[in-house]
Length: 360
Image 1 (tube, rainbow, N blue to C red):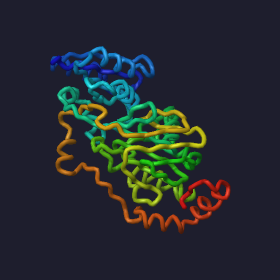
Image 2: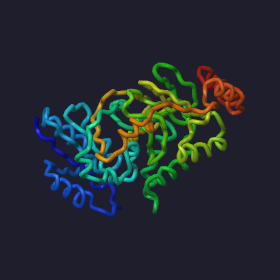
Image 3: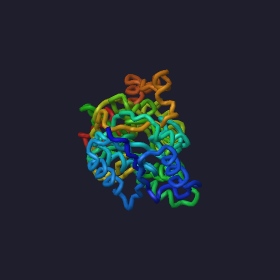
Image 4: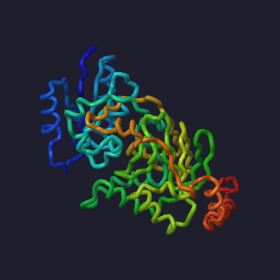
């Protein structure tokens, strides 16, 4: 069997404020020390990482190869989409950006910056999700969070703003403008009633630079976690749960406006173009299908990660835990007594359009 070839796909734009030169101070010394066959490729433009990984994996045929995404979430997105469909390709991450949401389940940033530990890591089969023509390993969504993600790039131009702060600032702006979405949504063929704040299909737990959107998701359980957040209250009432419980605490699933499902496929239709967020890559569309791809990719878990031990002990599991008020009978009762829901969702909006299935 051919020896494993290591390719480091470097985004030269990502991580300009890093205090260390990851390539020259970490990657090259580790590769030389361990004597591995390696190549460093610097991407030239958006999409170049996809092309390089796809063409390289194809040219190698059955020979095993490992592609390290050296950058942020965008670099990982490109490596994943280039490697998908190639059984000989493995994907690893060396975090050079500020988000790094995918790696949180497996360990902290320092663990992934241990290049020797990465080279000696364990290849592990994970699920993926397909969102339209795109492949993601973390999440895909439409609504408030996707609109916030699209604006996050502009927030990065604010002096001193980085990481989660950019998402928080973009979210603060969208809280005044993007908290109502008229979607048609189905989960495994079952229609969800709206209107919506956002809808998310998740293969893992974090996005948006540390927001724990799907706290029970696991990337190897052959299911997606769907987080449906409905607009059931007025804006002042939604402000604190969205800005604190969702963005900071990650306990939004205790509220009745948030429903949590596990399944294989979600379809979303918007009545006007809305932003989608697929592992941090955003664009506008009216229709999105998010579906599970079982065993879609091989991801390299760093040598010193506690992931497998935490799974074996039960510390990491996919058990869905919701509060009493977020269970169906209580949630339906409170929705019926909610003045905003009664007057706006079930009253005014259905008078305007009787076909709208708003929280009946």
